[in-house]
Image (tube, rainbow, N blue to C red; front, side):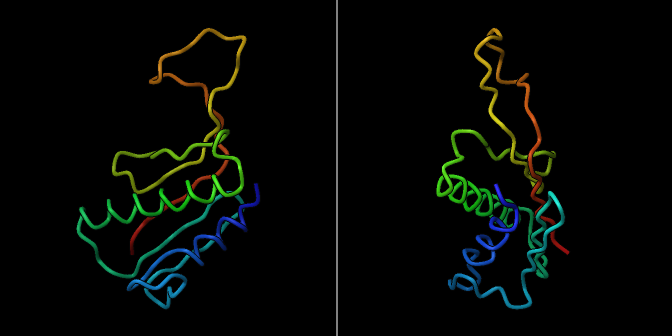
Length: 117
């Protein structure tokens, strides 16, 4: 999976004012080696921030499905505020006994951060 293509996908699909790809100065999408950061210049309430994070999670899932890796990777919140998400592999080992969902063995692939300024 190419992190640059995920960054491009998010830049093209994030809607601002009802228009896709029209980020302007209000939203910035940047990428490091294994991390994509989406920064909003607006001050959002906690409810609006949660809705924005759910929207970015939705777009990330859409990207995974488009590239046929949705069966291997999943998007999960990695902190209490749910403003940082990670892509992790599903536990697909067949030799190990079934584990509870609270205790999966996962491998971190990429991290996506959604902070606001």
